[in-house]
Length: 258
Image 1 (tube, rainbow, N blue to C red):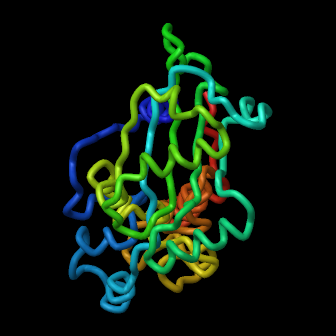
Image 2: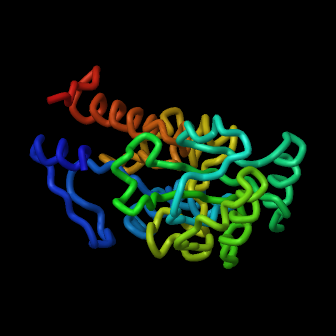
């Protein structure tokens, strides 16, 4: 809400529920997989660039599992009750094995789970009956159709025995269905095809400036652009910096603080 309010305060407009099928006028920053440019620009794309985009393949995916809990999580290690984010994978060797299995198209017995307890940072997330959200996603092979709810509950039971008993409701979305909610998440790939050391530096195509495209006025600011996905916003920052410098001659990002 704060980001939208800031956009509107600076003269922006928010439009939702509209699929972009034609190139918009003016300067555009695309928060999409790089391959989305194929459907938007079609034969307007340079042939070599279009061919490179067509060769891009999704990375291994994730499945989403969200919970409503009746009470605090009964962690074995009570210090975890103070944390907001959790990386649940076991020992290093176990995590490495799980990631190899998934990269080879097989479901891991104990997959890597990333989870969050937002109410730890924001107590207003707890309702008057004590219910609170618990969000998670689990690494799976790309486009997997398998609901991972039971897998996540099983892993949580390892670290918090009794977790199953406090579950009020669940919502599981397999990797194959994530794009129905967010078109960026093709086959459950949350990185836009960019999750590798090479892509983290070079972006989806080999260019000196990976946030720019050969299309005049078009820039890539999604997880497909360096430094790839994560809660850092740096792909957008670098894309905006490139765009302002090239299109408007602005050499330093202006402050948008109120």
